[in-house]
Length: 440
Image (tube, rainbow, N blue to C red; front, side, top):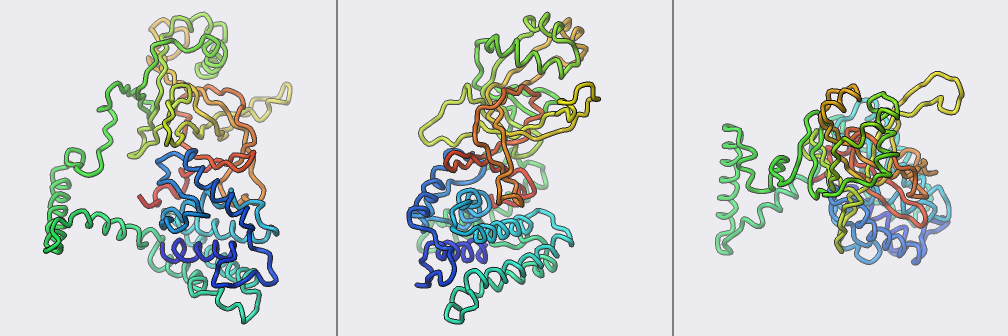
């Protein structure tokens, strides 16, 4: 926490802006112009509208509001926002490549589990990174020795610490900082603050033991409100779907063109029946449209909203973009070749959430025993791997209006965020190896 987010990253940004202890860039070319850094700051602040709130707090303008940046904000900016907004900003690509190498090493360090081979990768990676740092910033010039603080040398000891004590989340300072934050409101007396804190710690420990002994974690969740899915008024839980439907609910049947074209084609693949059978019975299927979908296969499942029914507030944080999977035929363009289906990941904006009630005679025609089915329509955003960000799980789309894909709700994996950079939009996904070790 303090080594990387509170020191190294702050020092790097000071170097890029020409504000590090009065040191110029020497023989290098790593300083960003004031206009470029101001644009990065504005884009950082604007990304708060396109990144869901479940990803963490908003990151302020790094150009004008850097003093408000917490360690968590620096962490998020480094891992997700910085690689997008710094791309093609340096006069020479080697500085951006050096930064991406740092981000990649940090993602390995932050994994919930880490193998011996990955520890060795971290060790050799940081040796190379520090060596390159000395070449790029120190430039082998003794008069520039102040650009090599002890925090840069400390990177060489990260791999040894992980090997001795485990992943960094086991002993970083975030839990203690958060715990200290819970103690502050407990102080009720200015005259005897220590007694107030002692009483709070004692009562919290007693309450925790009661929860464990009598299995009352939900009933005694006095702090953060427990997420009981079935308690939401108007919610509908469909068995065997790993998701729950939440209001608002539309009283109007979805548009006929959506049903006859996109939904019908998806049902052909879903039930392996002809399009004629689908068209003959689709009118007899009662279809409701909901505005919200929540995954229930995790304690903190993502809550995703349909763009068609989402009401945007002034300070909204867009929760409509998702990652989903579909099966793709690798031989689709080879006439007469055998079908080879593989799972592929896609990104797009959730448009419609449809709950299908299948009567008994329709189930017979569709050759299924399902009484209920949740289908979603997603506007696909064609993505590509951005040059320079190959080591990172960040994809870029130049246009947001792709095909409308209708898939089973189970195919929707998670909520994703976006960072807009000019005409391009980068998708950031926190559902990988880092999701379990983010400070929360």
